[in-house]
Length: 262
Image (cartoon, rainbow, N blue to C red; front, side):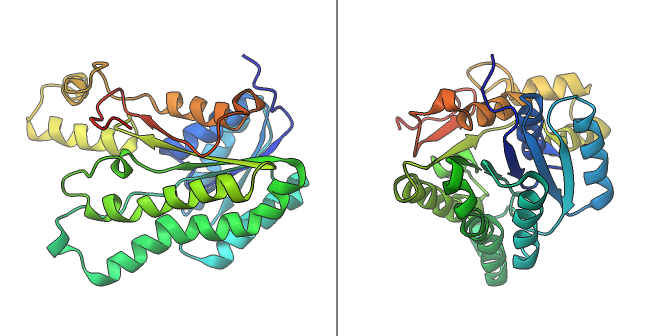
């Protein structure tokens, strides 16, 4: 399917690996020129080489820390300088530490808020004039924890909800020029999941990687955990004119494991 976004430009944060990388890849496959981002410059360059080899849109690697306001400004500046503007902003970030409420230091709450919320606020603030100029999109990659609290993830449960409140507000205040949506991923086969399963294999908890992967998907209605590219293609669709009437929504991508009605 042609999503009609070839030649557009996009900025995708935290995209050297995982779900951010999948979103960047899906956009590149559609012919979108993409700036990717991560803290590890060597890993980021390797990802840029991999995505460029797909033969779609151009790919530029811009290292940066989402906790550093100057790095966020530079991300937007680099995208505009390279591609003449920004049509699509996709925000992603690493997950905060897990643990019960009483084990989380107060300073970690401030760090998590800066990482998950203020990075989005600053990026949108910088990118909004360009997004509004030609009609653009924002897609926030968050977590299914905004729908249902997940045991042991108090930081994610509490803080990520602010991104959804921001996304919903932006969907009205920036309309009709800009559409803003979010995706709420459940478990996907990313590097973190692969590492956890490999540790289980080493400990003898499961016989093989395949057995560990199957066990993790057993409780999900569709019978397996997610493929990161499935989420990436959803992000690309939401960024396209084919989704022109989808605005202000938060889409769970969890294989049906959520129990909430809305």
